[in-house]
Length: 213
Image (cartoon, rainbow, N blue to C red):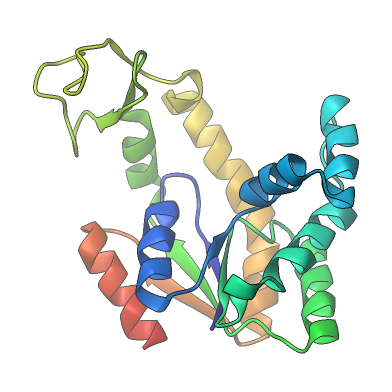
C-alpha cells in the first residue's frame, strides 16, 4: 500500500501518519527525514543537498526526487510507504509518477485531511512549548496543570513566533494556494480521498482506516 498524506499545518497529519505506519507496517517518509539521513550517511545526493543548504538555498526538486527514489526502494518499503509532506506541487507529483513507473510501483491512495480554517488557527495559535525540555502543550486541548509552567520540568512555556494569528493565517493561505493544483491533479487521477480532520485523534484515525481497509 503506497499512500500520500496531505494536510495543512495543524491538521494533525503527522500524528495520524505515525499511528497509521504502526497499524499497516509501512514507514512514514518525509523529505526532512530523508535529507537528514542522506546527510548523516554522506551519500552522493546528501552531499549535493548539503551544497545548496550551506548556501541558504532550497534543495532542488531533482535532488529531492532522487532521495525519494532511493528511499522507497529500501527494504522496509517492500510492503508500501506513506509519503508525508511530499509532493508539494504538481511538478513534483509528475516527477514522482515517472519514478514509480520506472520501478514498477504506483500510488494507491492520496488522503487529504481537511479541517476548517478557523479551527486550524485555533489549534496552531494555542500551542505552547517548554523553553527547557521542549515539551508541548495546548491552552485548550492539552493545557498544563499550572498556567505558563511545564508539567514535566516546571520550565516556562512560550508561544512560537510563527504561531501568532496573523502569521498562521498567512501560512494557511500560502498552503491552500500551493496545494489546490496538487489536489486537482490527484483528483483527476481518481486517487484523492478527503477525510474530515475534526474531532478526536481516534475518530480521525477510524475514518482513515475505514477508507484504507
